[in-house]
Image 1: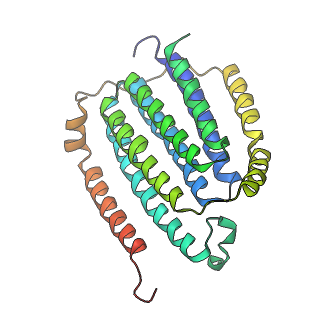
Image 2: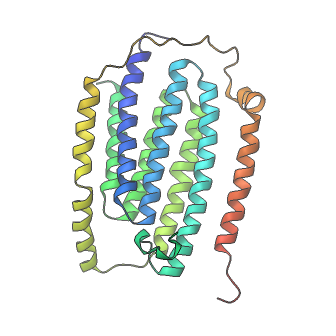
Length: 106
Length: 162
């Protein structure tokens, strides 16, 4: 580990927390399903960067890259299926407002 | 100023812009910009393969998916748009304040400078790690991709009675 690693870890972890907060705020504040997906994407980006940063700091870049690639693949599948669900919701309700999803109350 | 700090500032600003902008196409573009900046940071953190994945899939494919679904939505009138913009800024106006407050609070907090790290691994080639050590991950990825493909096919399937 070189001498600048703790500094790099400190700087990047602040940025990761801020991006995570932006994504979480978007997810909590909105009722639009597309915007909620965008918030989820921001959360995933913060986590991806944290995995890569941890790999860089610990010297296990290859393992971190393998995990990040797995995360990205799962992320794109989640987004594709969620977009399909949103299209179905739009066909039924003529809106993508999450507050209108009363018929799945349980 | 350090290049890492500049990149992080651009990353955070693009993330905030993505959340704050009232128009969804701009939010999708902001998400693409965030992904592109994240790619540069990944290159800086010596992870080129993950960076290429991030650029091609997140900045490219996911932005295209978002823009295509937004294009399916109906247009709103100018009056509705003004009302929605006011509501939007009212709803999201607190975010920059929270971000600045957290950034100031975190800059006062000092992380430990001594990490007790385990010994360096013998193998540090991502291809060998991915194929030899994490092959179950690859199997899981294939299963999830197939599940996603079937899920999307079922969701987009036109029903006969419709």
